[in-house]
Length: 475
Ligand code: NFE
Image 1 (cartoon, rainbow, N blue to C red):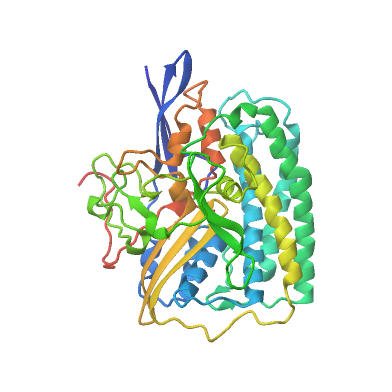
Image 2: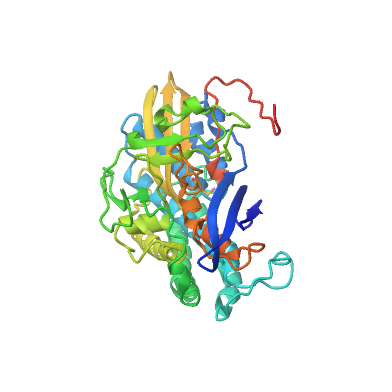
């Protein structure tokens, strides 16, 4: 007989998500036989942008989320600059990379130690760790628990490092179309370098060994939670001024093929809404023409997230996708591979950051005021810590007339699509062995490995700018 367990809200994530699992006994083993991920939050950032100056986009979209604001700032300036195929000066490119890199490091450290580790290590018997599920954690991971204070310090240092050029963290005000507003000096480059040295040491001597130790003790999780086996990245961290090379190249691969494709068009992305609380007529639109007409309640719909698909298929995004597509990590696709790839990615980004620091020229220009955009359409594709992030903008007579955002968590935790194909996290949950359906820590391990952020994932747009009324019950 099936047992239905509802986790609402799922804790130790950002934002509001409900996950419902059905557990049944198959071949003598209890396992998840069905899963539904629900974005329960309803927000309207794109609406705020309509009619505003394009200069507002990087400022406002960074408020979508306090964990990955820098990526939204970067996506917004790339989208605005793409309107006129404009490229920023060298120093601006490097300063953006350095500030974005700092945000990746703080996010990855935050995720492993504060959000995911408690799936593997019992916390102290005190608030905020208790009360907690009484789950039998495996021994051998005392070092991970002992390193929690060092991780909190490292995360603070990463935020402070981001603020050296970003001015403040979270939500930097230095990302502007045309360039960057901070000027590198010998002093702030030195300050940044000191933070980076401390963080590089933390990543290499604490974070990576801790993740490897979790992988050793929970090695069965290298075989659990493959998900859809399709991986996609837009790419990020521009390595030259012509934007022909990036630290992470974009691309996609299907069925875990180590040889993916590096070319694809975002015109091949569409969003299904059959199981999302939006009008069915708006299903399968591309983000450039995306329409968001809420309809709640609606038939069998169960999420405020749409279901983004590339070539009509679900794709996982995130550190594992980036590392896989760039040939940096090809061991496998699973819960534990996501953690290992994330930690290795932190080391790769930190090493690249050192090079970008060396390339900065103190005092040289960071902004080009000839930059202007009066009308046109632009796409900004980059990466957030959790995966591929895209902003699509239309400017009409100097004002934003259309804005659309598709976030990484929308890819990973999407509901079923119009073909009834479950999203990546839903697929990863199905088949996961469960010891006790009342306290399904195994499901949490699958969920947290994606590092979901529902604040980022749920957005609403009203092209007609009329007030929106959402009924919480029937109507
Ligand atoms: Ni709110 Fe975000 C990242 C973005 S998640 S954290 O990383 O965009 O979908």
